[in-house]
Amino acid sequence: MSAARPLVHALATALRDDALRGEWPALIVPVPLHGRRLKERGFNQSSRLAEPLARQFGLPLARDAARRVVETAPQSTLSRRERQLNLDRAFDFYDRLPAHVALVDDVVTTTATVTALAKAARRAGAKRVEVWAPARAE
Image (cartoon, rainbow, N blue to C red; front, top):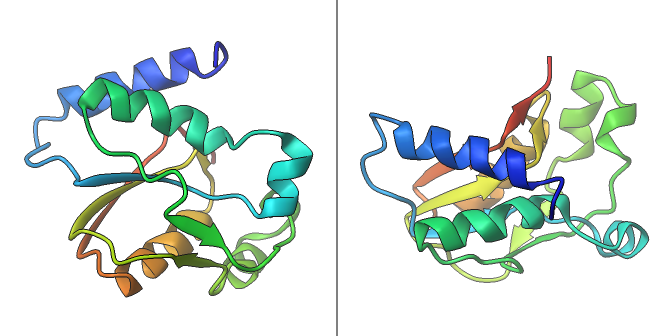
């Protein structure tokens, strides 16, 4: 968690200071890893960010609400177009979602991952989907 602490602090500060914040989401959902990748890595980096954010803002965390139903190639090895195709229908939710959710990812590069997860969230009932990430790669 020590490596995540400054990222969580920066993201929490930005979220708290957002003048347009309005209503908070009803649920926080970290981007899931496929079971095999989770076993290899030993942790989910998005969950490591989402857990302290949920505590800090007093919001429910649905650590296991989403699942990666397709074992995809690592996104870091793919082009923008390949990333989008790689994640098509890769995510699913176990249950219906509230109308407003926040998805937490560690780094947004091409938006392929969060776009695919947001589409799955909408299929599961979400009407408003926010993406919370402490880093954006160019």
